[in-house]
Length: 374
Image (cartoon, rainbow, N blue to C red):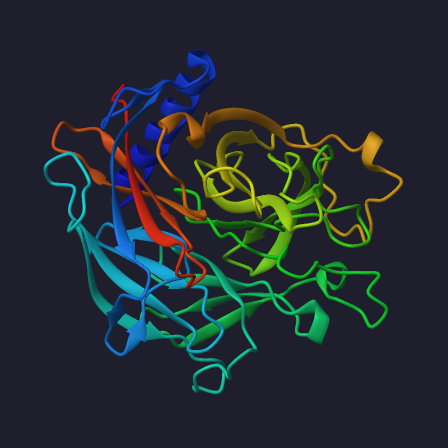
């Protein structure tokens, strides 16, 4: 177990270094090569697909269970909070339609042992821990004073414990504190040693600063929990990118924020930022992967507000690894990212998935990449 986790971490550190050295990406057909990563194809699950009495969609986070050879993907459905178990066949070193198979669906249950009531949970992040449990996140509903949360569950969906979410993240009655609507805990990741849980607010807390704009970044918070104690032990300032494209017309909705974190170790992560603008060319989605280091960043744990201090706080270090626009394919609302199994040639696989918002014009998209061998 320890050897497998260590090898996976080393592979990610290697690909991050290759990206930093390689510069921008290029496109070369169905198996486009990019610095550090090779794109090996995609599989599309059409919107409206059903499984075991549920509509498949809203897959906002994905995690791989190497012991069982399956993936778990959480559905961003506020009615029937659940996750799917999937098999993704990459045995030929590629990904295409038909390679994704759903094998089970599991309902999450609260501390009372009952399924969550409709419209009380906004499920987003999901990660498998080294102990074989799942940690899921909910963005909450600030407009209805339903708090965001991070909770641990069994593989059967039973809640095991709730991690403490400090007061600065909780919405108040005046709307001057806490996570913004749909900009809360979108992500979850566990490093190879299994000691910590990482998550992030998708954008700034209300009291910290503005959400991302067309020309402005947002001061989000990156969090680290100690999984042994359940305590939040670190927080760092993470500046998101601005919104990638103006909406059309300019009054339409647009957003950018952190939608996934993938820790390589206790100090180094990959993050995914997703920008979406209604009416923008193509699908309006811009997906970027970053290498992030927290080494030397200011620990702001315990701070109620970062406003007025942002210039004096040292943020995490970010380096752009890949803009998925360079793949030259239509992109849906890609929000999930995980390591998969080794490919036939020995390279490590990386799998991404999209949240189709259960919208007829969108689709559930799985993307496969190979990480180069050392």
